[in-house]
Amino acid sequence: MIVVGMGGSHLAADLLKILKPELDITVYRDYGLPKVKENELVVLSSYSGNTEEVLDAYDKASGLNRAVITTGGKLLEKAKLDNTKFILLPAGLQPRDAIHLCLAALYELLGEKLELPEVKPNEPIEIKDRIPLIYTSSQFQALGYIFKIKFNETGKIPAFNDVLPEADHNEINGFAKFNNFYGLFVTDENDHPQVVKRMVITAKLYNEIGIPTKFIQLEGIDMLHKIFNFLDLANVTALATAKLYGLDPVAVPMIEKLKKELVV
Image (cartoon, rainbow, N blue to C red; front, side):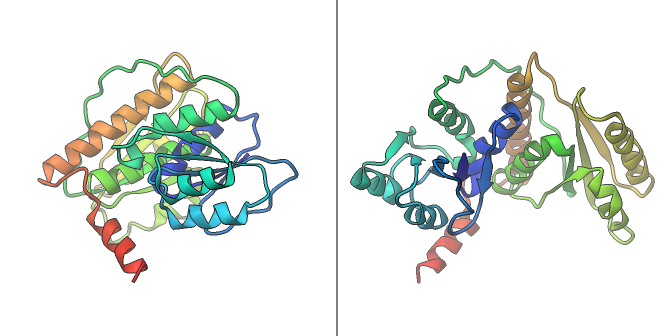
């Protein structure tokens, strides 16, 4: 399966790779298409239905086994015109807040039904006047990326994510002159012991140069539960960050301005 999507519209596919590691899933975030295997399903995912990269990929996928996930827009028009299978999502959300809907749609394309777990309310992590650095193991890189974009789009602050052990071979050496960061280390009981050890040592080294850190343990009865508990934490933290700075957590003015400039 290839899932084409940009911004919040590809996040569900990133999570599906964690939930179903046995499946061959490619997440594609660009114009055009990657190499497609014979009879491979190409999923075009755009919450708005007007994402230009996804529309371009849809056209490139003509004649292939394709399906659409959207709320409407030009993508839905194309799918209806071409008699392409589509799953219609409820509208009215920001794409980054529709991960559960997109994930359920992907499960539907796999012939399964997603039962969303109940999650406990999380207390937000307060980060002020510092830039979050989110670290995970390679297995959970998608979670770090989701936290990053929640900080960007909802919290309206810069944030970056990386994985260990790779970051220990380069990134940790980049703070000789700057320490206005906040390290968030996301861990799971199934992480490699050496990765966990590296996280502990990396956090200690950051503390020594004035970078505060916090460990986040994934909690839940299964992987789906862990993921949605974490998503709730990311949501409430990003909302609290926007509130801390007196900013609107919903609006994305820079993104909207960019889109307008692209069509000029």
